[in-house]
Image 1 (cartoon, rainbow, N blue to C red):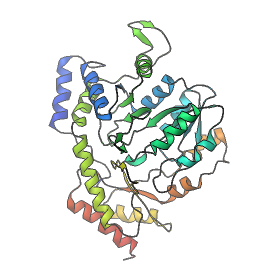
Image 2: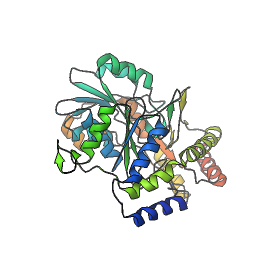
Image 3: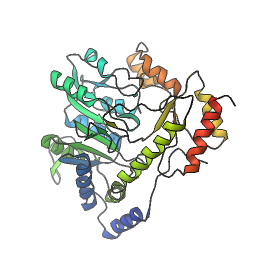
Length: 360
């Protein structure tokens, strides 16, 4: 079976975990601090704040920016639901704009039309490993005095014009096992803003600046040293793993036929958390079944856009229409691109897709 994802856990990660267990310092200790320092360097920012998950990173970033009841946050309807749910967690309202059908990211030309007097932030999602058009987004944010909170949970070390994802506004990352790097579970916030960094640290730890003195409502969003030890080891392998993903993607780019391969605009560095094709003519589900029968794993990210999810329709109504998003949900198919794939695996995937699309 050629799996969709395969976390690569080596001797370095195992040794690091055992060292933590032997140390007796298991939570919010020196390994977390080292992971934060290393991740900040990788992103090119002053601060990185480790959290318990990508979702809590999003939640915490919104809280640190003061997003609350009645505030609107502009984001994408074509992503994992945590992006929009995090806005709901703080009492805000997610406001969706449609995607660019080529990149699957927010169509920046539609953002300003969605801005109202209640808008407080833009939350761009760097989907599949490709950043949004951050020049355009930062110009809009500055013009309207809006915060920018990047959902870079799928885009570790992705770049826009030489600058890393998570270094434009306040960045948020996930280290879920299927991501380009993992800590088994965990998240990270990145920022150059000293005040935002301090607020994140306080809210993350039950609102404490001094032990047992609680200055504000906080949460337990801390990362353990066990998770940070894995993350530190993985961080050292990120560039190598991303390079292998890009190599695998280049093979697909040059060999796949009858489908639309990922579009990468000039000046962008895609890190291929997912290699997502578009399958025309209503053939996506049939192709997926065909691949499954031949032991090739696939996944659909995402079959139901957020605005069409049941409780979102109950909350906001069924009147919202985003044509590019809805069309993508019917055609996208992600195929294996992870670093563990062999040349034989890549050839099998490409040849099987080509055979199906040729009707043979």
